Length: 280
Image (cartoon, rainbow, N blue to C red; front, side, top):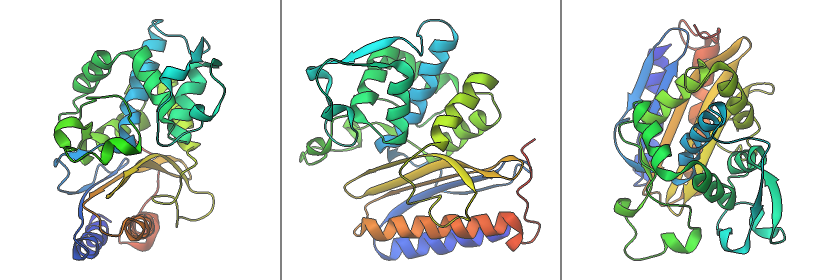
């Protein structure tokens, strides 16, 4: 199985690289522990994938009683952010629960909801949890800014949120095993990730009924996806695909979907020793 995944990753990376793009990949089978990685420790602009660790910290604080998922918060005019999401379109003063904020942050990648979550959980606390969980290449450095921010001539990794494929792979493995916060909180977070509405990458070409708990991210020349793919018995494997420097981003989206399909076939039996059994 691992060899078949390695072949798929190499083929995908060569095709994307032929167009001038760069990529990092992490795949881990949760039952066997097999891993395939490509430049997985390389630092990438996080885009909206950074919303996964924000989600984790908010649930951690909720479990400790520092935040309450059913508490209501107002979306004031000054809190609206550009870019993706729907909160910015609602009337000023809209009241929503923290659970709704976190859900919209993930399933429609709402930037206003994300900034609310950052304000409530606290950027220092989010980064403390990132470090405590062992994510060595990940940092939340700023709130979400929307499209015009990325058009600035001085835009660079120095002012962006950052992460790596191995970090997101580790975080998703912890979530799949109920070890990020707790079994109950992790299951609730995975349920939100399973309700993701942007499904044009990892889930796009998978068979009907296959579920993926994931979060996409994108801006300009970047397209990411990171998630847990579920087999018939539960979480089967983690797949993280990061890209940058894309000349044709829509083509890269399709290439990520094709890679995901090939990996699924290898794990489901198309490759030698393939298995979608339950995680240990």
